[in-house]
Length: 272
Image (cartoon, rainbow, N blue to C red; front, top):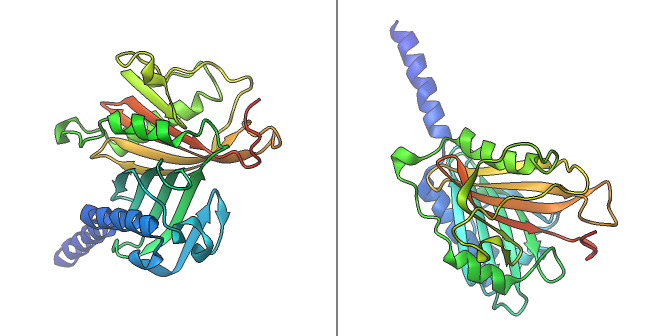
């Protein structure tokens, strides 16, 4: 009995240890923002074999945008203590070269070393890109922590995001949209027309879209999820392929309040 109890306790301890400390994830996200602002990779705690990709293209991290300084006007991060991951949205509207960047980082179980970095980097020519508009509208939004007794589970938060993406393949599927709800797509803001209404509803696409390769970062405290994915149909030169995209979503009591979408146009030939 003593041995059995010990084994159960040890198993529980291992589960607890596997979850990342939120403060460490916050430090990692802060370090990422500082590294990008200064173009100094040494500010990040990188593992020896850290993988790095921009717009789904693996590359040498020393050759990427992260090694170049940019002016960051606003940033917002979420922290996934279950997966030991962070997500950060950067808006660089006043930078010499404007960007809106979504970055997903995975860390080791201790939360001390970054093992994987993926960024969707948008600039002039990408879908609805307008960094000035993005900066203006994202600053208006409220993404403060949700009171503990009102927080949704990871499953509920992910289900809301999946419902939004699944509707692109079947416009009759229900989506848990809040009222109000606003979508920031590139630099265009649906909430501008009526801030107190549900302006996230979308009509059916000309053809059903299957959004694949979904990768999640979920933060219950902030009621937020980001979904890296492949957006199909948009690129006219790739009718059967997809382009790098992410959807950054705020969920409140099971209902979607905000949606931020950034999508790359690989050949600058977006739209139909």
